[in-house]
Amino acid sequence: MSLIVQKFGGTSVADTEKIRAAARKAIRAQKAGHRVVMVVSAMGKNTDTLLDLASQISDEPPAREMDMLLSTGEQVSVALVAMAIHSMGSQAVSLTGGQIGLKTDNSFSKARIQSIDTGRIERLLDAGNIVVAAGFQGIDDDLNITTLGRGGSDTTAVALAAVLGADACEINTDVDGVYTTDPRLLAEARRVDVISYDEMLELASLGAGVMHSRSIEFAKKFEVPIHVRSSFSDQDGTMIVAQPESETAPVSGAALTRDEARVTVLGVPDVPGMSQKIFSAIAAQKVAVDMVVQNVGTSGKADVSFTVAGGELKKTLTALEGILDSLGADGVTHDDQVSKVSVVGLGMAHQKAVAASMFRALAEADVNIHMITTSEIKISCLVPRDQANQALRAVHEAFSLDQRPSDAKTWNEIKASNAKEADVADVVARLQNDALEALTLTDISIVPAQARVTLDGVPDQVGVAADMFEQIGEAGIFVDMIVQGYDGEDGSTSVSFTVEQADLDSAEKVAREICGKHSMRDVRGASGITKLSVSGIGLRSHTQVGTVLFEQLANAGINVEMIATSELQVNVVIQSDQAGDAAARLKQAFSEALN
Image 1 (cartoon, helix red, strand yellow):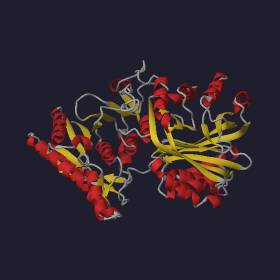
Image 2 (tube, helix red, strand yellow):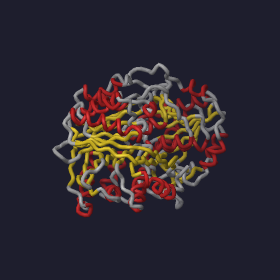
Image 3 (cartoon, one colour):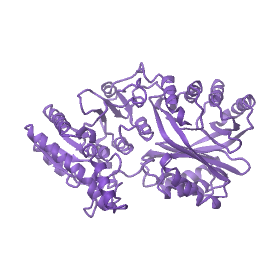
Image 4 (tube, helix red, strand yellow):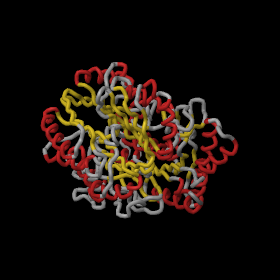
């Protein structure tokens, strides 16, 4: 018999009627011939109520006791769901995280799964039961109850699907699938039939609230198909799998992260170790950094710009104040009235002019761009917050995301065209590792024979980025990394991009034409550089990756000329004669994580 894992979030079990609806859905699946494991979250606002109770008792309750308290929410839900199934004439057994054998480390409130003993679940399924498992929780080696943090029930569901060898993991929620953007912001947003793990990871990191990044990381790592669908109907939703919906569409989704803040450290000495000092100080305050832009320095100094969540700005500035003198930096500027608009798509890795199309769409909507970062499958622009919605609409329209691509495939079509035997032995071997959520790096690579061009004094005006990259594209020059940050002079910006070394002369020629057209200060070109990339699963949730990378480069006396980050990669530009040493050091430092 096939096995499915069905996850029901808090809104899907918010009251007794919804609990009965969830129970009916599980019973129908069992009667259709499936063995069924349900993973259930706490009812509705139950967790918020428990948090409020704790705050009335103590300003700083012990983390262990908070996990003990919060875990009770799921225990209520699973018991009620099991009761509902029994009342409808079927068999069910409810289990806590500890009872399903989900073992974690001892990091209270943000525990990571180490292993799952499936013996008890298998025996209950064999006896004809629907197993109702508590999401979000587990136990450590000392039998303390732990919780998994944000998105914990999704992570529990995908982890169980992996270790049980489930045919699919259904995420039943209050939306009927994944959309090309948030349908609450754009009515024309389209539900997609299929989206790839990589695309969904990027969208999840950008605030698409359908699923949390950790669960997608787990699904990609262990090849678990995820079906996102509505709790309140039997209509098919969206499959999250390895393949994209379309092979030709450059962009599959757009996202808006509204509450961002931009921070720029001005005049940082352009010597090894500076990035490591900056980001270590911020990490010590447990602040997550998002867009990171380090542009190419002038006169021995560079500027480092990055974004943080708006609510983290004060802590970030405090952290920087403590190291500013030791850095020898000129100062810090910030802007708390910005938002980030991004486009994501596997197809853009193989197509030119995607960035130029996005920049032109923003220009035509009269939206100014403050910062730019790119990766292989994502382009992000920082824009004024009061223009955020029109920026999202502009890029959504520019890439026709409201229309189904002509070559779009359904999940059944993708399965049929990629029919092959799964490497079960490989998956089982990886699942037996005693750290299921350990960082997994897929590659540490170098792209040699690169060159970069920097334009200084770029006017901070609408349409300049579009003009620049359209003209570069018309010259037939393929651009890889693009970074734009503040350069500290007269409110202007600087833009750097990388090209193949053979294209440097052509790129510089075009750049000088652009420089003259827009009255920029200067154009600088350089060859003999290499892009060093760390790629993997869990780069965002394992925040030490960037710290270790910068630390290793600093210890080797290797200067970082450019930085661009994404959910799947950390990219830096360094001198080519140091690339081999840098890659070797990183492979050694991350040896346990390399796949």
